[in-house]
Length: 163
Image (cartoon, rainbow, N blue to C red; front, top):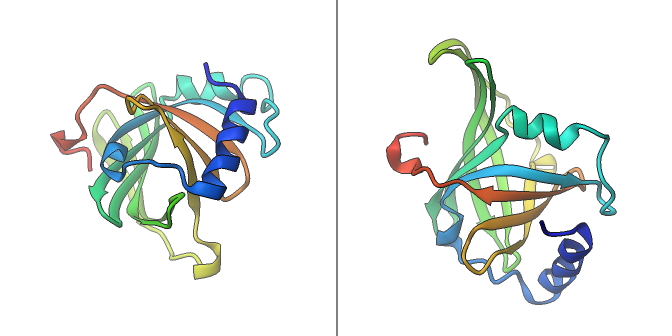
């Protein structure tokens, strides 16, 4: 597993020279593997285990600067899913996004679907993309709240209608 120290060093490089992430390699389903605080310390005990147990994942589909984004967790057939639009900006790059809807489903049946208000432009959530494995197998990023995250790319194909 990649250490927080490695990610922080990669982040310094990305700030100076960009991440070198090829946008097309972002397409897919990313499973959350590990999180750290903004300074690289571990979160509260059990946090990562819980998020992995809930199948926390990020789905990205797009090209160029315009993307679709989904963030979801699922347990015992109950799925909580946020869907929206995203844009890639800059050489690092930044994935700036806005969730437009939230859905709560049970065994594939939608129980609740709610439109979400647009956040003020100065408060838009984002992921500053730090680095990606040469083979596209993992992705590291820093979120708007300052925390660090590491995702592994899932094998499933998102073109099956997930987005």
